[in-house]
Length: 157
Image (cartoon, rainbow, N blue to C red; front, top):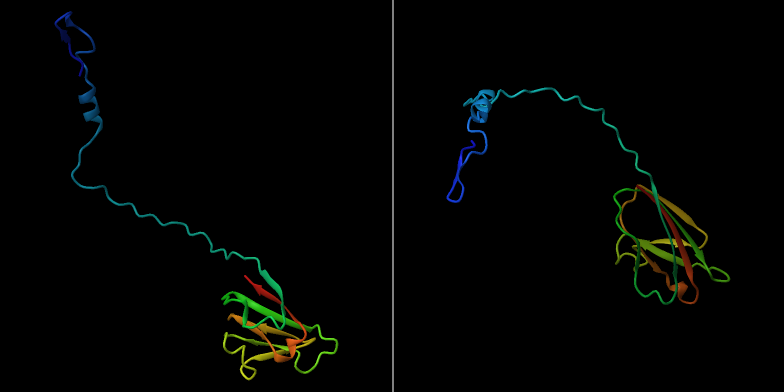
């Protein structure tokens, strides 16, 4: 509330409203209660579930294996959303022979051994559906004098 202001230099200065009734008016508008309000539970309208269609992606590449490829190369990593994988091989030899192929496996060590790896030969292609694991490649011994091109396309989300 406002009240008279006293100062030694000016004495009583009557400023403000000495009959301020803001406090009682505000108290009359607010009702005090000790208990919390009753909770109001209303049903929430659920929106229909909309499945978002994600666009597919193409992961493509080409790798040339030759005598300088001395260790297995991982061309594709693990991809849980991979749907399809297509591999194609092409030998740069003048007359591709039986040893013009690339060894393909799902593990680094398997791709080095001829008995544990899959052989993709010159001019051949292969499609793998729903394979999500990694792909390792290694050149066969016949590629020491020539080069072998491996091309792939992977369809994924």
